[in-house]
Image 1 (cartoon, rainbow, N blue to C red):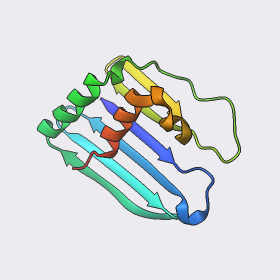
Image 2: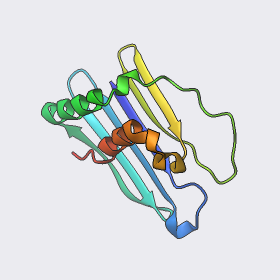
Image 3: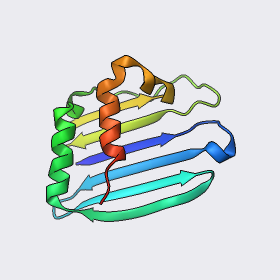
Image 4: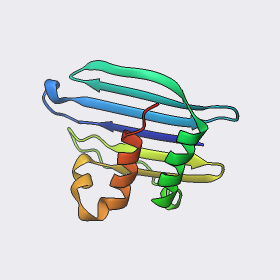
Length: 127
């Protein structure tokens, strides 16, 4: 299983820029969570930690209840908009693959409840 979330602020004043990358990988004998966060051009978090099976199962149960495995696998957006970043969530479990791209303003739309809930679960993942 591999779960990846990447989000960045896009083109804003340097002091407000941020980037986040979380990667959860379940291997045969261990589960690893890598979290990287930067703000204002400085890396404030860069860690990889082993996750307990119980915590991993809890996260996977929540993500499964939200239907992460049923979200279609999207191709990268072809439209380029100056100053706009495309963020994404990618999920793979065996042959099941899901991926969605988004712009930050899309997260404010009412029909984004499912995807926002998925992103919120990932963002709260801590070892």
